[in-house]
Image 1 (cartoon, rainbow, N blue to C red):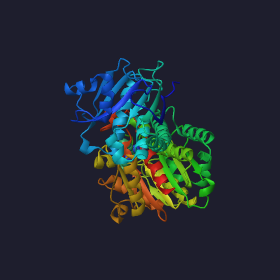
Image 2: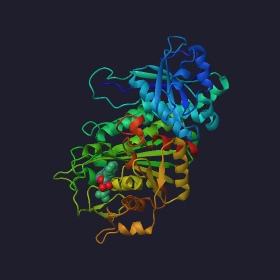
Image 3: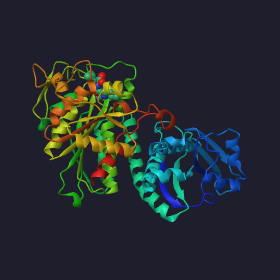
Image 4: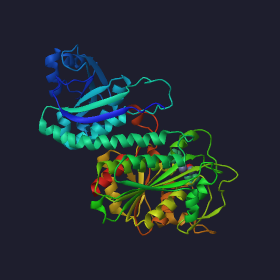
Length: 507
Ligand code: BES
Ligand code: ZN
Ligand code: ZN
């Protein structure tokens, strides 16, 4: 199997004119005739940048580019000017997205090394460490593409990409470097999560998810893990995950990762619980054929938990965290659970199944109850849970719901810093009313309306007693909106940056 692109990002002290790289990347604001960096370069290039801007061939419009061949007048073979858009709109988020775009373009050009010169107006406003982190994450993000099953060595892309974030000032480099080190780790594990989510269901089924977790635990110090296979799930009477998985040849599994560094031994643990439906056909309540293949990415929540656990362990954060991944395939067969079935979940609460396609909440109910048994004080679950959340929010933000305002505020702060947007949707008794059953404790669907909220209300029943938040990441399951322009198609690995940032804020 072909290797995914290897990306390495670091900060280094270097001058624009002498940095040895395949391509120097310089940001330009829209409507600015020049800037400090361009002026400095133009002295060596006989005004080549000024010319391209004056001719109107490059305007600095957001996500535009122009490549200049330097004829070795500077050490770099090429310069890529990238448009930062209007200066008044410049934010950390724009910087991320532009770097993502630049890395994607560089990889398409088969370039092996880039040097990114940070626009002085950018890092002054945002802070150099934050800039370093965001740029490193963004370069990983933009360089990625999922082509493991496409034959051919390189398939029109660089084999690897080495990126340097450069500055001529040593103190600035130290700050950029601190951020870049973290960003390099987080970016790598986010791409890992993307690959897990992107892998097809014939390759990445629950036992394989478990084997990935095992590989990570072997690779990174400080993590340990347990897997409950189907027999153990039966012994424990985890009726939610068992019911969802019972129709498939691929047996379900609950995978538990533990990260507990000695310094955090006395902390009350946080649990991250991920939905990992390796394929969601809908089961007996079968989904329509159109677009069903995308449901291989219904394991995105679990993939993000796996990536985040790896990242926090590699960063050595001072937090005690469990990662619980509820893995099952939702398939229709003679053995499948059916509409009308009543199942007894791990918590002993019974559920009337009214739609086998509302399976995520069933696997999560067992995962969340188990998290409480492990003593988790705070629980954050991630799931591509509802199409309704996409109807509500489009493809630009994930939904956040929960029972603790402070926790939701912390997640929102982490979300802003990480550049993974979330939007608070309502919870309340009214929604919980809708998922009461006449013949069991709960039913697994509400009315036609507010599906993201009733789904969360269902999960909330199992989280009682803990501080809990639920991230409905269905809107961000795959590249839509701006990501169609600046990133590869497929999974966004949404949640890895957000969760890591959230736990960094805690540590
Ligand atoms: N995995 C889906 C939700 C989903 C849909 C995620 C589209 C990403 C993109 C989930 O299991 C599901 O099928 N939900 C149903 C719930 C309904 C039956 C109450 C839905 O959203 O239609
Ligand atoms: Zn479903
Ligand atoms: Zn699903």
